[in-house]
Image (cartoon, rainbow, N blue to C red; front, side, top):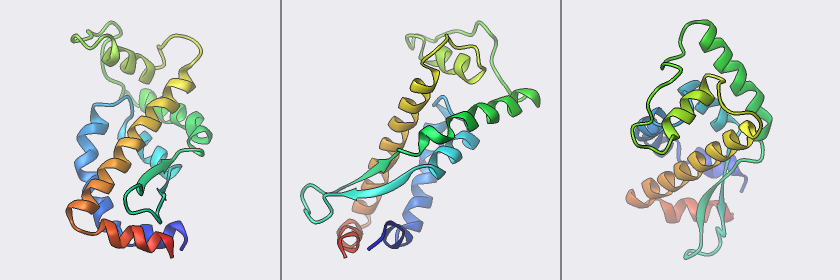
Length: 153
């Protein structure tokens, strides 16, 4: 069974997780537009689908690297329209610089080099969290086993 066959079966759960994940995205370095791009480049797979104990949904983010330049374009467009927020200095609210670093990165003011690596890593972490939330949603609705089985066919 191809990925789209089993993923077509979980549209409702994806919509639920999307709604619940909105606050997580709001607290991340990515805008909703950027997150949509990341999700477009992410494919979900069921790893070890034939093993009920080890099976899990994972995010394949191999294509995310390809859209990283487009994330910068989205930020440029938002900044040009006056949509960028936050003062240059900002405050870190005790987060060890995470919020400030995220804002500076979003505004193109981050330190040199490694920006793409940081973007990729942040995208991978969020998609991993999303995959876990999706599997939890399927499990809570009693649908995980049938979806897992469908992925093995």
